[in-house]
Image 1 (tube, rainbow, N blue to C red):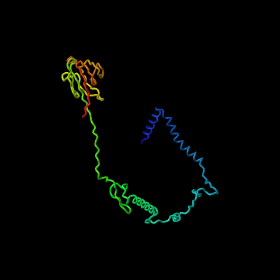
Image 2: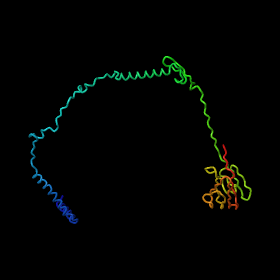
Image 3: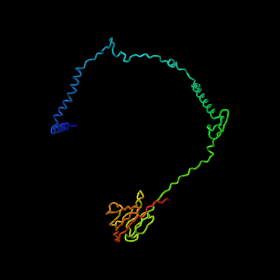
Image 4: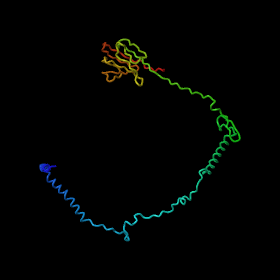
Amino acid sequence: MKPWKVQKFFGDVVYDLRNRRLLPIVIVLVAAIVAVPVLISSGSSSSSAPLQPTSGAGGVPPETQNAVIAYTPGIRSYKKRLARLSAKDPFRQQFAQSAAKASQLSSTVATAAVAGSGGSGDASAGVGGTVTGGSGSGSGTGKPSGSGKQKKKKKSSKTSYSYSVTVMAGEATSTLTPFANVSSLTPLPSQTSPAVIYYGLSTDNRTALFLVSNKVDTVSGPGPCVPAPDDCALLALGAGQSEDLHYTQDDKTYRIVVSEIRRVAK
């Protein structure tokens, strides 16, 4: 690299640092980089002193002293440690006494069972069949449990009920027409003048429910209306109650009477 290029490069660097006011900081850093190693080397050379080995107790150097306390183990021979355990034959019965007691107990139970069930022929010895045991045999006096026919239990028949509703409908000034056992969604008093439509019975089966036409403007009677008497959409009538409704389609007043709500067995 040519000398004039090197001089130009460093000149540009110095000029740039001067413009940015960083030249004093760079000078301090360079001086610190040069001075710190010199100070460290001089300080370490003056403070270092040859280390003399210190003798331990009795004048013995520490490197020759034992770092672990000596331990002399006791008996390590496995024969001496296992001497109290006797060798056992794996093919020899180890629990002969327990087996003898168990066999004695089973024989005692068997003898008691034979004494209670043999020879006497008592019905308590068993129901049906022959019981043998001990020196004798006996047969039970009871009837065999599998031979007799069991009586079938009669199923209790439950009676179900339905409800029949009789409605009378027509013009309030004329004779009403009876509708016996009226079915759900039946227009009343007729198909051409559906002032109400029979919906069905209430949950307690005590009142008949009717859907009121939007062409009915006036409802008069004891039956409650939902949502309001002057805006009746659902009418409820009990047995023996009647309601008059003004039907604006033909400008006539119709009467609806619930004659009877009767429970009928199916």
